[in-house]
Image (tube, rainbow, N blue to C red; front, side, top):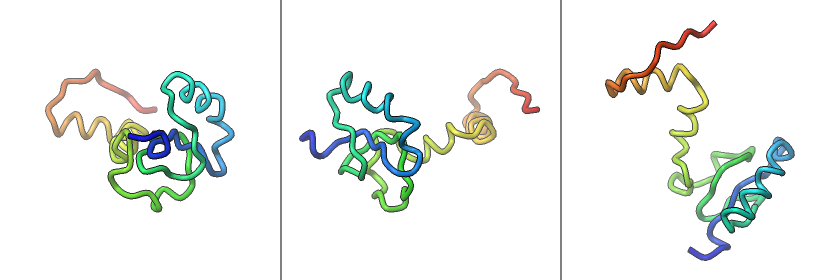
Length: 90
């Protein structure tokens, strides 16, 4: 892929939180930091996620969504019969 086709997506109202990480990833991975979606994206922050086409993610968006919620992780593990330690949510 050409550099202009891939990017670490760090844009929108919350992007300031991830700016230093985005710059670090840019240096380590040799991937440009972009404020608007590229053809293929590593997501850090963006406000209009619905504007990005379905297969334009380095990590599938559904995986990002599941990883962000322990209840969804537990449900996915249970459904797939994957052992995991007991988690208590207080």
